[in-house]
Amino acid sequence: MILILDFGSQYTQLIARRVREANVYCEIQPFNFPLAKIRAMAPRGIILSGGPASLYEENAPDIDPALLKFDAPILGICYGMYVVATHLGAKTPPSQRKEYGPATLQIDAPDALFEGLEGQEHRVWMSHGDRVEAIPSTLRSIAHTTNAPCAAVRTVDGRIRGIQFHPEVVHTPCGAQILRNFVHRICGEPGDWTMANFIETKVGEIRERVGARNKVLLGLSGGVDSSVAAALIHRAIGERLKCVFVDTGLLRAGERERMENVFAGHLGIDLTVSDASELFLTRLKDVLDPEQKRRIIGHTFIDVFESEDVVRGAKFLGQGTLYPDVIESVSFKGPSAVIKSHHNVGGLPDRMKLELIEPLRELFKDEVRELGRKLGLPGEIVDREPFPGPGLAVRIVGEVTRDRVELLRRADAIVMEEFATSGFAHNLWQAFAVLLPLKTVGVMGDGRSYESVIAIRAVESQDGMTADWARLDTGFLARVSSRITNEIRGVNRVVYDITSKPPATIEWE
Image (cartoon, rainbow, N blue to C red):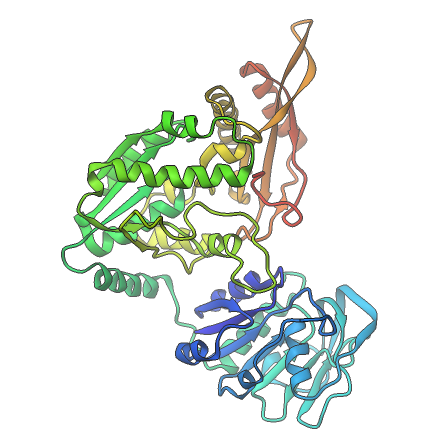
């Protein structure tokens, strides 16, 4: 495996994606991850990410110098390069000209990092305020740009390298090849990490941990993640998996029937349906803060599980936690911040005597979809767009009431229907409706109206970590708006969200 040590870059998850696209397993850990744990992991290579800090700031994040004595090859990216170069004796002063955006990389010396690249000049993406210069005799400069005399360096023995540009972003066309060269040619990874291998490994791990007689309880939400987790655990332990589908009253139209058909009917998985809609809506009454909504929903899920007879005799709780859930929920990466909490991250309350099984915790969303296909899940489940665990509650900005949920559910159904028949859906990561906490004046039936506003959100993305708003045909948007305002009483205005991630998140709450 490859270990990525994170200094807080917004691109760190993209490094992991590029490494996995090279069929090499990797993990992200904080920059100050203990050396003893790194030794125990025995990575074949280590990547130091970029970060927002400057080496000249007080308490700037740094590594233990002993890390550079590891036998594994090391690649520092941007801030990670400055850290490495500084420890090796280079001078890394603030640059007189900050460099953000495209630059032309000139390769000055052949290196395994650049194998397979055609020509000596390549477009790369820069995002830095410091730069490396005055390198010691132990380092060699192997590439430069107009503003960076040492845009890529390596030690004389070739074990440690640093690059000032970001190879993980799409704006560096040669970047994927550079990272493949690092993990394959320099680190010696064979590139044999596949979904078939993942299934075999995880099935074995689940069987060993659960044992021959214990049972696993899993809460199905209707989304891709919990569905794939259920299929994988079922592959490992069969009928000892007990699934509970909780009707929270916050689901999309037809969700309950769909899940009963797929899991109980198609897959033959033991499924219990629990209607807890009244409980969820009661507890969400008068709650406006999105983080509080998420906490209440997470705790209520646990309470519903505890009240079900199927819980008795179960030793483990299965969850569809994904890698982005962990990254966004837990500030385990030093300089990085908590973005938003996810109801399935952070463990279980002490009173619930179940152990967690999270077989998808290391995967990104697109990897989960691939896994689901390998496990035989139908396209109506695997290819569904992401849907938040808290359901429509976090697409209702403001108070969650039964009437507001029903209004949004009807608007969302129209959005889903129109996108399904439009031909746009296969290019999108997500498309959905959001109910805003305001009313506007309108004219309906020759009379004044004062009704609610629906926002439409549609984004394009590869993994959900970054996203761009979809440039949709205006005629299509007009049709969606017309249907919503004509078919749903209580809505007189529809707006379209044209914000990317970052600075926004995909969901509104």
